[in-house]
Image (cartoon, rainbow, N blue to C red):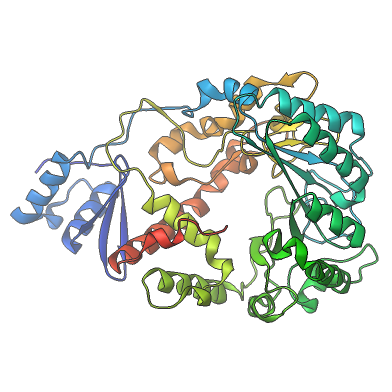
Length: 483
């Protein structure tokens, strides 16, 4: 049998041995002998006399080859499939604008990207004036001619409620400007500045509101603190109770509670609080992790006491998928991971790829998902990137888009082209431009530093998918899950 070195990834689970064919996205169950055979080939062991396979396995391999599997690494050029359409999309199909109305905040949360723990952002007194805000809304209108009927404008900080008067002017102007479209609004707030008047206004204006609440008092007050270091829980929960009192606005459908999970808190107490406390259990709850991109000092890898709890919650979600437990036993905190498994593997395209150009997964189309406008009117792909980095800037509301800059953001994989082409996780990569932020350049070193983590995450998701599929999981249950 001819020696081959196919573009594959071998996966071993508790139930069997599998081969993932990179060029077709096929996952094939194989026996242990074939697993060891291919393992030697992948590792470059040329003399494989000790791993010879019998006639039955030879036929299996030949059939796989006949079906288009086991081919070598594709010769492709790294280029995103939407590159040639990017200019037209940015000029005509925008539908979501995020306005940074202030860089100031009345809290000093320790893990905030403005906290001083990051190499770029810090709190400042910079605020967006009406001239910039008005021009930004006009800019969205001018670039949304071919977009769908729904327009979404978000308000971001700092703490956006500090600029509630500006927000009100923006809402009024946007409704007049987009007369022929459905304009919706959202904001993320720490909820400390809410009062009856502001709450009434936000609900009457049909705002979707994300409130930052990490958990019960002992959790919230650990990191979400006032400038003097005291905790913010009592103020936040009081304002949430005010929202609940206004049931005529159907608050539970308009409010999401978001927790930032750190290693030094008890995840069990957080889940118990959001499931059992009547002040919060009517709202959708989601959990996010601390941003570790662009930290001044690398985060110490301490013991993560929440790993077992998190994995147990994900396990329960999987039990629901295979029909072993009811949906009401599933925690919302498992939603993001479960959705990633379903979207990445259940929804994957299977078949031989013929493209000469491709790009690793990860980057969204910059500006289309959520165009971010800072206090001065500069434009960025979204609010997750740093507005202090030159490479993230893709134009401004006065001069328009810098298409070359936008294409560089979209094609971030070019900086690691050789490594990406050979990577088995090419289609499942989760790295966007934020992971390659070198300030004034796209950092090859920073991007490569994340590769091991990405591949490990993808392999774990693939294993979970394989086991779930083996157990007859109804993946459709998760397609409309909230993340």
